[in-house]
Image 1 (cartoon, rainbow, N blue to C red):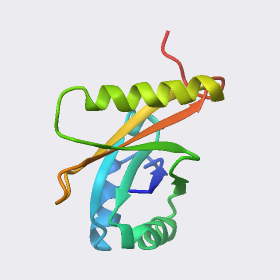
Image 2 (image 1 turned 60 degrees about the horizontal axis):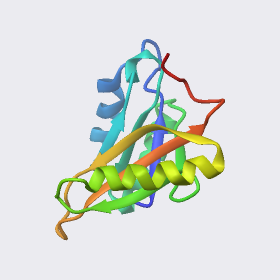
Image 3 (image 1 turned 90 degrees about the horizontal axis):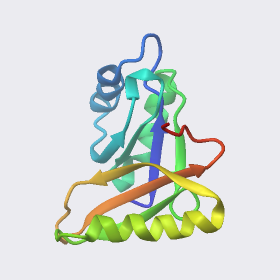
Image 4 (image 1 turned 30 degrees about the horizontal axis):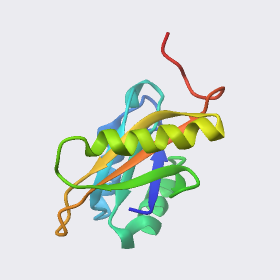
Length: 136
């Protein structure tokens, strides 16, 4: 979970199911997914199995989606959480502290499945204050 793919599921009209079908037909397994306003022009974020990033980008590109690959620490904060109260809060608080120094705000979070080691992967995606949409 050290990378993340973000893509607007819009070829015309936006259709998340169609995008997911492209990934499914290629055998891409998603271990985390998230996003908001996905069929209203915002991005769908997902993490495939570690060995499937190239495959995911390739099949989306061939299907004419414009996917982009994000990197841990540069583009998002990765936390590994125990299944206990307060874990997500601590992760978001850490991201918020880092964001204050960089002039950024949290745009969304992506939560993954619980792998065999019992830790839950959470990616906190932030954007520059001026470029992110802010609720009034």
